[in-house]
Amino acid sequence: MTDTNPSSIARITVLISGNGSNLQALIDAIRDGQIAGRIIRVISNRKAAYGLTRAANALIATEYHNLLLYKKKYAKLAETSNSEITADQAAREAYDADLTELILKDEPDLVVCAGFMHVLSMTFLEPMDKAGVPVINLHPALPGQFNGTDAIGRAHRDWLAGKISKTGVMVHFVIKEVDMGEPVEVEEIPFESGDEDLEKFEEKLHRVEWGVIVRGTRKAIEAVKKQKEQR
Ligand SMILES: Nc1nc2c(c(=O)[nH]1)N[C@@H](CN(C=O)c1ccc(C(=O)N[C@@H](CCC(=O)O)C(=O)O)cc1)CN2
Ligand SMILES: NCC(=O)N[C@@H]1O[C@H](COP(=O)([O-])[O-])[C@@H](O)[C@H]1O
Figure 1 (cartoon, rainbow, N blue to C red):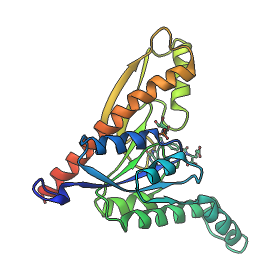
Figure 2 (figure 1 turned 180 degrees about the vertical axis):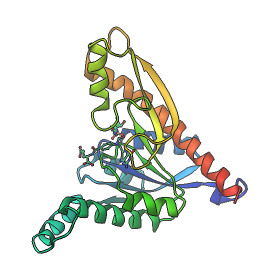
Figure 3 (figure 1 turned 90 degrees about the horizontal axis):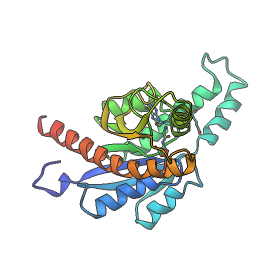
C-alpha cells in the first residue's frame, strides 16, 4: 500500500463471535474516513452472531466457519486411529488451517479479532506470519491482567473485593500465548463509585472499546504500511 494510489486502502478481515458492536465501530470509522481501510470479509465461529447481520447490512462479505463440523469429523476418525493428539486438538488444528486458507485467499493486509472467542493455534498463526499478515485482538483488560474469557467480570469482582482500582481495554498483536502479545493501544479505566452494577459498568467499558479498537486498528495499519514501504 502507498499513499498515492488506491491500494493505500488497507484490506481488513474481521473475526467475530457475537453482537459485533466493535465491528460496527470499525464499519462506522471507515465510513467516516477515520480508518484508511476496507473490511473485505467478516468471519464468525458462531452462526447466530448478530455481527454477521451488521456486516451484511454494510454489504460486507460474511462467512460462518463452523468448528462443530470439524469436531464431529475428527471424533469419528479417532475411533479408528491411534493418533498421538486428541480428536479435539486435531479438529481445532484442521479448523484453524482452513480458517487461514479462507482468510488468505482474500489477500488481507490485517486481521482484526473483534470479540472472536476462539483460541488460535499455530496452524493459524504460522501461515499468517509467513504471509506477513498481522493479527490483532481487542481485549477488555490491561496488558498481563485477566487474560482469557470473562475478563470484565473478573476485574469487576476484584475491584469489589478491594484488590484493584482500575482496569482497561487494549488492542494487542495475537501470539500463541493468549492475550500476551505486544500491546498496540491501551486505555485505562479507573473504577469509580457508581460502577458497582456490573451491567452498567460493562456498558461504560464497551464505549471505551469502540474508541480503542478504531485507534488500535489505525495504528496497526500504519505499522503495516511502514513495513511495506521499507521492503
Ligand atoms: N492464540 C491466541 N488466540 C486468540 C487470542 C490470543 O491472544 N492468542 N486472543 C483471542 C481473544 N480472546 C481474548 O481476547 C480469547 C478468546 C477465547 C478464549 C477461550 O478460552 N475460548 C475457548 C472457547 C470459549 C467460548 O467458546 O466461549 C476456546 O477457544 O476453547 C480465550 C481468549 C482470540 N484468540
Ligand atoms: N477475550 C476476548 C473478549 O473477551 N472480547 C470481548 O468480546 C466482546 C465482543 O463484543 P462485540 O461482539 O459487541 O464486539 C468485547 O467486549 C470484547 O472485548
